[in-house]
Image 1 (cartoon, rainbow, N blue to C red):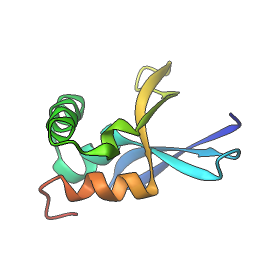
Image 2 (tube, rainbow, N blue to C red):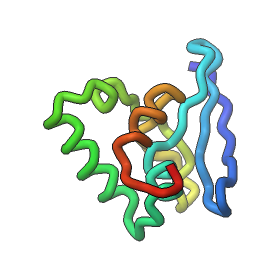
Image 3 (cartoon, one colour):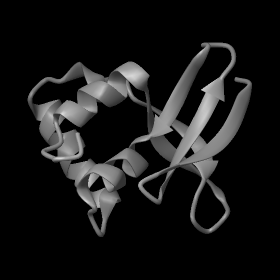
Length: 100
C-alpha cells in the first residue's frame, strides 16, 4: 500500500489522515475523530466501548474498519483503527455530540 501521512487540525486537535493511492481513499484515525467530537480524556477507551456496542448491534461499519500503522504521540508507528470517509460519517452518527 502506498501511503502518505498527514495531520490536520480541527478545533486545535490533531486528526491523523493517510492517503491510500491504491484504493484512492483517505483514511482517518478513528480515535482522533472521537477525541474531536467528545473531548474525552481517554478517546481510546471511548472508541473501544463504542466499537463493542456497535458490533453487538450488528453494525457492519465497525467490522469493515482497518488498522494501519500511524505515528503515535510517542513518535512510533502503531496500529490504529482507521475508517474511510463513508465509514467516518456512520461512526459520527453513533456518537452523541453537538459538534456532529
